[in-house]
Image (tube, rainbow, N blue to C red; front, top):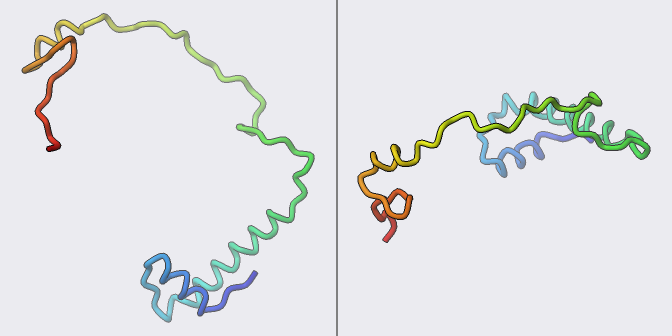
Length: 95
């Protein structure tokens, strides 16, 4: 698919971009190249290829889920200007 300068200016207008007349020719070429690449990718036969989340077939190393910090809730709540039932009370900001 090939674009012309009128289509590029329309796209720029829709995207709210300012494109000068000098830049239009460059954008026509670049956007046309991108659309040609997309057409080639769409033409590829991928019917027998299963989707994958990663190109390498490896399992992810996971660390053990262990608690590494002590419970400091009481100390942290003692610093709060106001609290109730273990929750921080903050001023109302929406009326």
